[in-house]
Length: 432
Image 1: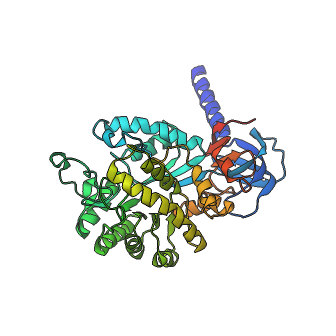
Image 2: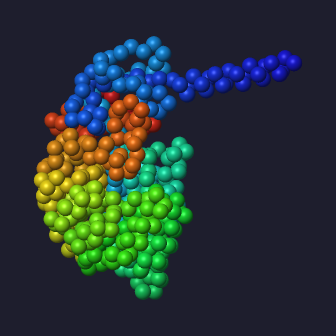
Image 3: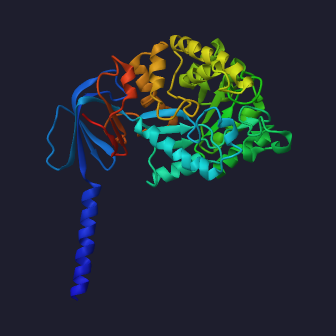
């Protein structure tokens, strides 16, 4: 009988302990607060975090007796955790990157990617959209992060991108004829509407969250053109109608104007890069309520590498110098034209963990600092259809970053994040 009472007492103690932990509150005092929605910067604000969510946002520094922890950020500016809508967590561009696909196994790629996920989170990016990987490793990364096995941002992944034969995401580009094979829908290569439908369904089977297509040629692929359209309208419409059936949105890598416009007419949600965006494309972006994700860091990176002898294969370097410069120049045009813009870096082309450099380039090329911040918070959350992300308001998930100083006066300070919280858990706390 005594043993039975002891067991019941122990079970009750554990239950109450778990209940207390579940409902523990964290109080954060913010010197300044940018909530991701308003244009106003608030001063002296208290946030109350419970069960991974923001439950109160109060003016002034309130006292809460039941608080489990108080975090004093009175000398810092708080912002929502940043969202990067264009990453490639499975790799990073360097001189030997083109040879790695012949030497690295899937496990090697996945294990190295854990370094990139941690660097991304430490930089203040609590959510990313990954737009094309090898071996579907970002699906496994997404699950490992969600289970707490590794540190990293919340991932929404397209897994393997879709291409046409010889197109930008054809995995056999640049491979000898003996090794090329004939990749098809399973490998992300389509030719015709039926292939297109099968490829989208395969992504659903694999566990992807969205679809990425390469609507035009690209800079880094071992192919001559970086601009030509690479899908027919029939193929695009088959991809998008099937994606809609499965609850996917479609992101389109697109440099050349014709490929951009075809993709928009077919109904893609985002245009990635948008290098040669023309007046028709600007009009379509507005009419279709789609977004441009400019990836200026990618343009800057390939431009620099293209000028460095031997850094890129000759066919790639030639494209990089032209497209890289034009990508930066054309962004200013897009801003002036009032194009809807969301934040994305293409990190993997540029080094992971330096994602906030994109803020600097956006502002240098004509975007206002608050607009750039919103592009990486509430606007990016809207692109993802994630109503509980992207803002520091009541009811939102507690993804929070802090920097010292005023990012509206100096956007570059967003490259020096001192505090990172994701889902109410602190992952970085480098406070003075």
